Image 1 (cartoon, rainbow, N blue to C red):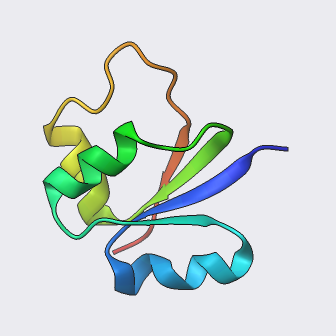
Image 2 (cartoon, one colour; image 1 turned 120 degrees about the vertical axis):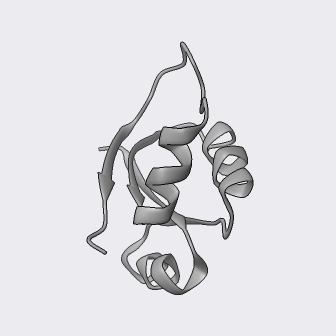
Length: 75
């Protein structure tokens, strides 16, 4: 089974560490894109905050690279 990561603002993702997710705190769009490009190997699902999802939509995250499954938290 693959690993899960959570990406976005600290207040929204920090608690997911308790469930075993790799937490990647990113509080602005540039930080989100940097964190996305540096996802650890073996991550199969990334839970995104709504702001993180918007940041990835507006910029090129990793063209041509393998992309993990994503799920966006409700607002």
